[in-house]
Image (cartoon, rainbow, N blue to C red; front, side, top):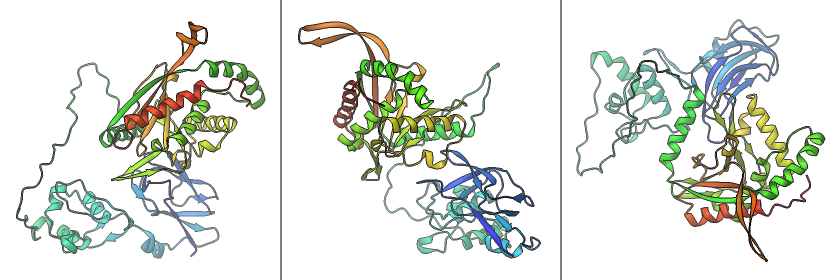
Length: 435
């Protein structure tokens, strides 16, 4: 019987798994080509997996809520015109591994994944061992005590299955605690959030999935990178006058609005070419200087959450191209139609605090990047203007830029020079620019 396997697709750089949030098709349903079969979610974006073939969905290998590795088979389709009555052979070959003796279901995880349990020991556990332990309710402390027969005492699947068979009768050998020949460095205590007690009349709102992921990502970023923020004030008068001059004709001609965002992205990309050290990532003791300048723009969603679509190769686009790309990505974000590719491979991020009325802020770095630029609200202010005839005071459109950067690899000199260069590009914007 001809069958087609649906696998968890590669969803972008560094993403190795996704969560199945909803099955759109059920077993026995007819599936047309390009029909959405299942909804999935990563820590970046929600998406759908379409079927590349026509047929009948005969098997779902995972349930809603399961976390599945990229490349794993999640469903199977019998092609049109084929008998769907006997799928046992395919299930045996493609379904997640099942151990009959212990009756333990195990997800089919790639052997190339490296997963280390957060235990108090330095012991390594494979993804398969971790999956079995999680499903059987084995605690980290209990796992650390099981004797391993693998190389250097590593715990194998067979070791764990033997332990499960004898778990209730205590017939398993427990690994002896090694003798400590020298004192180990003290491990700093784990930081825990204070316990909070709700009071009468308080409203308790459960975080949605995206908000939980944003929270975890922000905490991780602050723990990974020592943040430093530099500020500079920018005279935006020329840009404001230029936009006021062209916005009506541009909207009439192109059918869309022109905002300040493309101008900010253009200036940021130009300054990155001058100071490429802010367009980087840190890998251990290595600094990866990115060749491409892919600028993410933090975008508010209707739910109140944020997402960061990415303008790829921003330095290679002119102002019209940037405007078109910014408007397209912002529009897709508003209706929740961003694809995984739309939010991948960012190397630098810009966030617009001014859209909420804030004059400035100290943004958190979007890991694994090393810098993020924030633009504040543009406000009219009295400013001292230097002229050949002497200083005068005039009303100018002023804005504050702030740059948060990873002080491990970007020091105050580079951070200050970069943000100063962005300001220079903005202040020297040609009011006669054509778009």
